[in-house]
Image 1 (cartoon, rainbow, N blue to C red):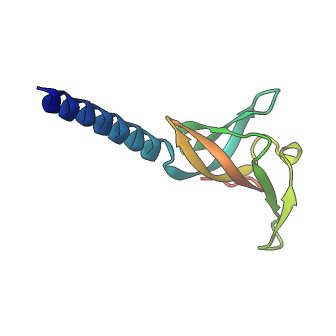
Image 2: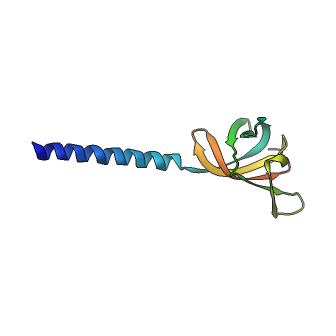
Image 3: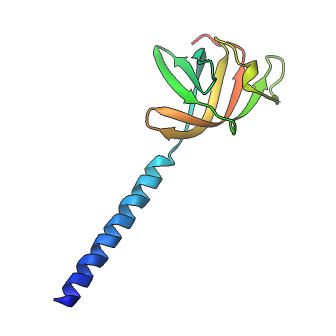
Length: 114
């Protein structure tokens, strides 16, 4: 009987460890999102981008790195969120948090018609 309870306890510990592992893998799913900037809120933590007819949200923070790409050069230069304007084209990479992308880096470029 004692051995049986140890096996049950071990099984519970393993199942808990596997469920936490699966949640971390799902949470850290990398992604990319791009589109024309529709809006960004006053505290500048969320940016709404539109690709086609769909609006998506990008979460930006203090650790998000911004670059700006000019029309005349293919080289991007360091920038900040203060350079962001509505209708700019924004391309961001980061991790998915549900339907939102938590951006680690974003590139700002001139508006594109899609």
